[in-house]
Image (cartoon, rainbow, N blue to C red):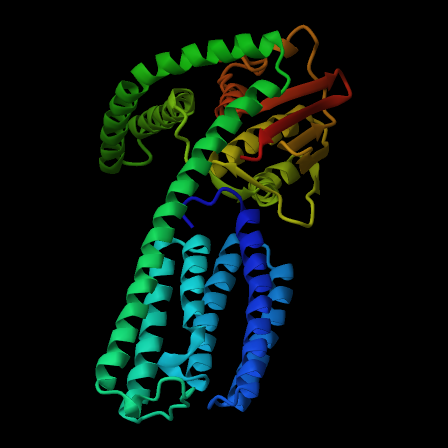
Length: 441
C-alpha cells in the first residue's frame, strides 16, 4: 500500500474482514433455512457445502494472520481473502438463483472492503475479476451451459423479455460495483492523505515532547547553520572532485604501475576519494525533511548494521552482544540513514576498545512513543570536559588523518531529521553508552 500509516492498521483490517465473514456465513445459513421453509427452488446441498468451505478457509486465514508479521505477507493474505470471497460468492450465487439471488448485495460490500484494505490498483483488479466471474456465471446459465436453480420468484420463462431482464440486472450490478469502487477509493485516499498529514503533525509534537536540553538545542541550531552552508558548496565541490578523479583515473590507465608517477597519482586518487567521502557526509547536513521514510523493522536494521561491522570487530578482538526482540518492532524511518547512524556509533565504540572488549547493542520499544537503540562499549570512555563537544562538526580526538570529526555530527543530524534524540553516557576507563530514541511515526 502506498500510504500505510502503520502495519497494525492492515492487520486490524484483515481481522475485521475475518469477523465480518463469520457474520456473512451466519447470514447465508439463516437465508438457506428460510428458503427451505418457503420451499424455494434452490440447491441447498451446494449452499451448505460452499458455506462450510467458506468457514474452513476463514479459520485458516485467522491462524495464518496470527503467524504473519511482514507487510508483504499481510498484503498477500488480504488479496487472497478478497479473491476467494468473490469466488465463493459467485458459487453461492449459482446455487441460490443466479441473477435472482439476494446474495448479490455481498459483492458491493466486498468491493468496498477491498477498496479500504488494498491499494487502488489491487482493488480495481479484484473488482474487475469479480465482474468477470458474475458475468461469466450469468451468461453461461442464460445460455444453458450451466444449470440454473431458479428461486421461482420471477420465472424467466413467463417473462415477455427475459433477455432484457437478465442483461439489465447484470448491468445494474456491474454499475453498482464500479460506483462503489470509485467512491470508496476516493474517500479512502483522502483519509490516508489526512493520516499522513496527522502523522507529520504528531512527529512535530513528539519532537517537542521528547526531553531536550539547552546543549541539544544549541547544537541543533549549529548543525542547521552548517547544513545551509553545506548546501551551497557541496554541489560545486562534488563536481570539481568528479572531474579531477576522472582525469586521474584516465592517467593511471596509461602509466606503468611500477613508475613513481603512477604511485604519486595513486595517492592523489586515494585522497580525492577521501575528500569525496567527506563531501557525501556533508550532504547529510544539506538534506531537508524529505528523507524517504518508510515502515521498517528496527530489529532488522540493527542486525544488518551489526553484520556490516562484525568482521571489523573480530579483527579488533571485539565481540558483539546483540539483543533484538523476537517480534518485529516497526517504525517509520529512512533505513539507509539509520544503518549509517548505527554503523558510525558502533565503529566509534570498537575503536574505543583498543585492547578488545564487548560491544553491547540492543533495540527495544520505549513506551508508546519511541523505539530505542542502545550501543554500549567497554572502552576508555569520554572525558567530561569534551563530552558536550563530541557532536560538534569537525571535532575529533583522533590523530590527524584518522578522522574527519564528521561521524558523530552526521549521526546527530540523522537523528534530528527523524525528530528523535541521541543521548550519551560515559565514564572514563569504563566505557560509553549511546541511546538513540526515534518516534514510531
